[in-house]
Image (cartoon, rainbow, N blue to C red; front, top):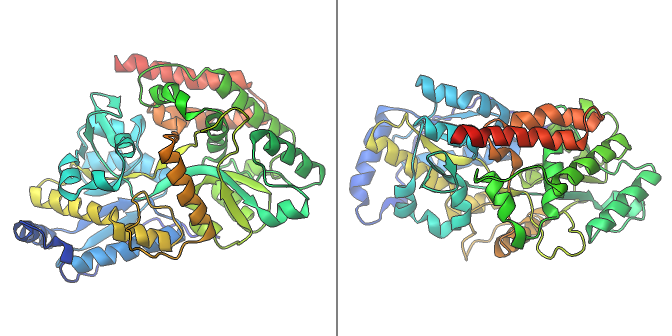
Amino acid sequence: MKRTVKSISILPAYGLRAAVALAGAALLSFGLSTAARADDLAVWDDQTYEGQSAVIEQLNKEFEAAHPGVTIKRTARTFDDMKLTLKLAVSAGDGPVITKVNQGAGDMGAMVKEGLLLPVDDYIKQYGWDKLQSDSVLARDRWEDGKFGVGKTYGISGLGEIVGLFYNKKILADAGVALPQTFEELLADLDKLKEKGVPPFMMGSAKQHLALHMIGAIDQAHIDASNRAELDDLIYGRGGSWNTKGNIESAKLVQQWAQGGYFFPGYEGISGDDAVQLFISGQGAFLISGTWYFGDMQHNPDIGFMAIPAPKGVSKPMSVGGVDLAWAITSLAKTKPTQDLAGAYIDYMVSEKAAETWANAGYLPATSLAADAKPKLTPLLTSGIEMWKTLNANDALGHYPDWSSPTMLKTIDDNTPLLLSGNITPEAFVDAMDKDYQAYLKDKK
């Protein structure tokens, strides 16, 4: 069972980072060391999975070793805990100087509006982050006057994320089921598995967001990247409606699976994280979730990963995903030396060195690996990197639906159990999403 880390402090201090030996860096280095000795550097992150936490601890130690006098006080919180506590803690003045923050209106957008985050555009220029990650990826951390995707940049992420289809090769082979190449073949495979008494999908809906990712992933796999403008407009708050045929059909299909015995028995009482552990142990043929589970999944060599198969006629299907929560600097970084220290910390977290460390641990970095990097890639990560390249080349990297309004995640979470249990129709589920979104658009005016 995976360990969940709630609060971690890391306290050693070491020598100076060689990379600071750039033009003009002597003055900056002096400012950083002075600030660090005066105060601890409070950092919040959401890397609570055991493998992820080990990487963060290693990177923190390396950063401290490169900066004399720096003391990192780390607090790790789950995604849901972060949403509940971050804005309140920063507002109260006892939160982090550096934090991970969920992109989207309810988190980053709200904090920018209240002046709780500082723009990082100067550090993008100073460190060349725009050379490490594409502008379309960086745009997911931009806000201006309540508008998403434009204006100043308030963060940058260290990990790429793709929601795709995990599959168990042994279970499929034992059931005589071939790996699906189209969405139509996937549907046929699910029927064959169910007929043989094999749970087609591992699912857990008691906590976390497996059902949300399933609905979004099915819908976006049906969208060709050439037709992505409608989805982009929804996510970036430019208008439109969630009430589309595609969204309704996706919700209807997932409801049919839930009602028709296509999910692991008792899924209603299983959390998303526990469902993943059951899948790793060999339960269920398929699971729809994201690359953030690569570190856990690699422990079962029978598990593979692929994009949700597209239906016939869709040549460049979109995939839900993007990047993990962004590293950001809060308004609690009161002085320029503290802000610069925070910028240096974030730079290390998105560096090529950090990318190689993440890759060695089995996770998908958002920053491209250096040309001379030689990480030990797992089969899962090899698949993820190839998918990441393809999605970026096709401009097919999709979005998380809950980014579209401050309250959309709660709306989806409140209504998903009702959808899966058959207590509301797919039309009512999508209508709840659209009512939330239209209210948000009205409030923005």
